Image 1 (tube, rainbow, N blue to C red):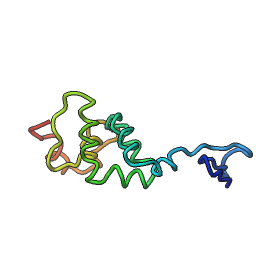
Image 2: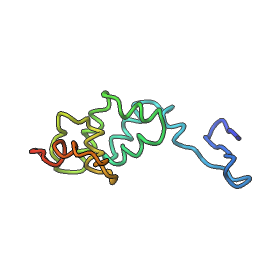
Image 3: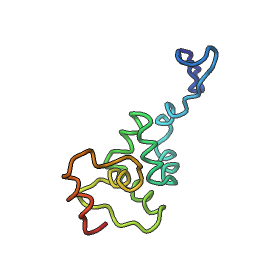
Image 4: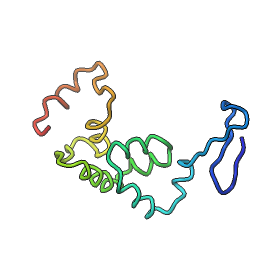
Length: 120
């Protein structure tokens, strides 16, 4: 592995010999928090979900309760959406609305929680 101090450039064993991969997201959590929050405030809910799934540090930051205003702001960028239900967190609500994977998981208890909701 090759590490360059100013940039996050690494050489991975699985890559072709001599091919370098730029790892920008590894250095993102090291940026000042106010700059990160400004950048994240322009993202939509699905973008925040994808970003939260990239590194442990970003997941910890974006899934914490202190980031709720960030998620609400992202939801407002989308347009007219109902408020987040009280039994879901903002990231869970964003996942339900915007992610494309199946939420059923072969368990019918989801029926009363998601399909028969009065507010959706």
